Structure formats: C-alpha cells, structure tokens
Image 1 (cartoon, rainbow, N blue to C red):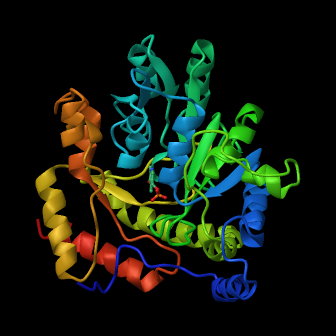
Image 2: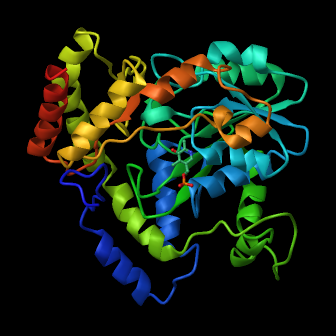
Length: 380
Ligand SMILES: *Cc1c(COP(=O)(O)O)cnc(C)c1O
C-alpha cells in the first residue's frame, strides 16, 4: 500500500547516477575499486577512523568483529536487548552467548550502570548500540571494559556522523560498525563499514574480509601470490554500490542538516504533548551531537500507540513501532530469557512510535503529520 507520507523515502544528492555510470564504464565492477577506496578515505578523514573497510552490510561488519575478537562457544557478549537482531546474531554464529542488559529511560541506550553486574569470567566483549544516533555513555563503558580486558565493539549502524564528546561514533571502541542500508541516514541500498581502531586488528580484518586470503597484500605487491591464510568470508561490496555511497558521503552535511530541520520541527510542534504528559520525546545529552537518525514518541500505553498508528494510517501517513526485544523473542527464550526480566526495554518496546523522518520531507508534510497527531489527542 502506498502512503501519502511514507515512513522513509530515499534521498539522492544528485551525484549518484553519474558516479554509477563512471563505475560501470570503468569496467572495474568488482570490489575494492576506486570508489571503494575513496569512500574509505572519506570515512577515515571525516570521522577520524584509524582504518575503514567497506563491507556488504553492517551485519557483515559485526560478523567480522566476532571473528577478529576470536569469540567462541562459551564466551559471553554483553549488549542491549533493545536492538536489531544482527547485533546478537553475529556472536551467536560463533557460538558465543548474548547477555542482555536493560536500557536507560532517557536515551534508550544500554544502561551502563548495569554493566558490572552482568560481567562474568566468561565475558569477552561489550557491544554498545547507539540508538537513534545518540551515543551511549562511552567513557563508563570503555573504562569498565579496559579494567577487565574486554573488547568494546560499537554497533554504530544508526550513529554515522554523530558524536560523543566531540568524537565520532564508531571510533571510540576497539572496533566500530556502520550501516548504509536504505533505512539509514547515508545509504547505498545495502552496505556497511568496519572501523578498525586498533592496529593489531588491521591485517586480519583485511584477510577476513577477503575470504580468508591475503589478496589485498598481493595487490599491493607485498606477496607474489595470494592464498588461504585464515578463516574468512565474502564481505567486500561491489564498487558500483560504493559509487552510490560516495555521493552520499559527500552529502553528509547536507543530509544531516535536512534531517535536523525535520527533527527540530517535530520537537517544537510536539512539545505541548510532552508538557501535558501525553508523550515522551527524544532526549539528547549535552555532550552528544545527534545525526537525527530518528524521531520517536513514547506514548503512555500500547493501546494509545496502536490507535495513533491506525489514525495516521487512515490519513495516509506511515508511522512504525520498533524492536521486539531480543530477550522476549523465540531465540531469546531459548537462551533462557523471559518477559519481565528487562522492564525498561519492555516498557519502551510497547510504547515507542517512530515518525516519518528523511531528508527531503517537506515542511508541509511535517505540518500534516503534526496536525494529525494533535487532532488524534484532541479527539480523545
Ligand atoms: C540497521 C542496523 C543493523 C544492520 O545493518 P545492515 O547494514 O542492514 O546489516 C545492525 N544494528 C543496528 C542497531 C541497526 O540499526
């Protein structure tokens, strides 16, 4: 069904088509071509990543982190339950167990005050997920990890171009992962990146990404033939996708400015609902700069949220809820979790509503969404 105001609409900067044409004409349509190299350069110079490697998705980059940290059967990895399945699957694939902690009521990020009690002798890594493009409390998380020799792997799928204390998300942990999926701020359809912030991971990351071979070294002339040297998989995207991504990465400031306009318009217009206690609105700590990935409302109960979704749908507007907590899913149950164990996560999951937010959403479309929300509440 088509919506008058969709939840998301792809935004193009204008350079995408020409880049794709150039990528195709070059005859160099495999991976690691000139567009991939330039995207990696941009990620390194703009965000201050020590090393950035494009991948086929953020899911793929997360899988690479599990291989790089050599996680195995019996290991435990601490993460929020309020996240996308890939955060957990990457580690489950290696036989490691996801250990879920609850989230904070304000930012909806992993509650760093619950970390220490979740750590056991089997814990190997902590995976903060920067929800909605607002940073987790990285100082505390990194300190807890350093004190105990644990890896920090940032799932910054939603956090590209957002900062924590002036540092870009994805560059604060040992490893960071980005998503360029169509639903994210900067998109090439399907894509991602692994940020390597520790030298010792650099060479193996390159090998794992190239099916476990030293192909990258071969192309640099450092070895005279390439061969199987480690475990790996196929994580290199085609250069045509990088051609699209490069146009998006060059438009980072424009896209962020556009999303900020939408976010701030919603915030101002919906503040009266927050003042009346009818909805919670996003909270951004002063030391964090958001990339405005998402605008959400936290309604007072599930029934109100369902009724508001239905009301907006009837008006041709698509609003959506978000994660079913991983710990209450069927895999979560198999891992030994039960409903009731993570109360904030469950509370938020039942009540959070995401509004249409994308670069190019017009002011009159935003006004229309707001009008319909306000009219919904005035009718009640
Ligand atoms: C989107 C997302 C992913 C997965 O990204 P893909 O590029 O689609 O694999 C992982 N984690 C989080 C938190 C996400 O929002």
